[in-house]
Image (cartoon, rainbow, N blue to C red):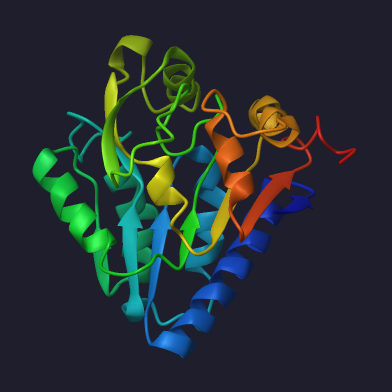
Length: 244
């Protein structure tokens, strides 16, 4: 595990994007194509913005997979992660070799699983939630399933985060369930980059880094066992661990 601390969210985004771009360029040069998993949410704004501005990436040789999506939320809803990625990434770098969105249906889960497991994922951008979740695997997360995607129930802390980020008007508007890539499948990525800015993430970062062992009560602790994991923080999110 490597920890990189930037002065602010913008510097974090640029630094992480530059690293991700270097990985993509190298993988494409070696294999002719690359596969990437993208997460969403407010914490990924700056990284994705900077990544779309990186030069020298043959995007038409990059296959993109989507991490998670609410069940029952139309793609036109402002909180839809399909809408988020389409507008903030896909439209800006098109054409991509392929785009695989989560739409919340069982048929889609089966299709995604088949496509996902055709070949390894070269790099996964995996955020960490305020409750320590990865994707929508809220505590206590299922760390044992070997499925690629599962239906999960969102806990109250997770729903409050979605409300606090401005995606929904009231708590009652936040969907109760989502389809999420599993912790097991996330860990199959050859490289994992986590971009975790903002003061509201400081407690989750502290719990993740200070935990002595992997626990499903802080799912992000699993990331520390990955052989190629980089955690990007800003001064705010690192405020409780700057002595590390």
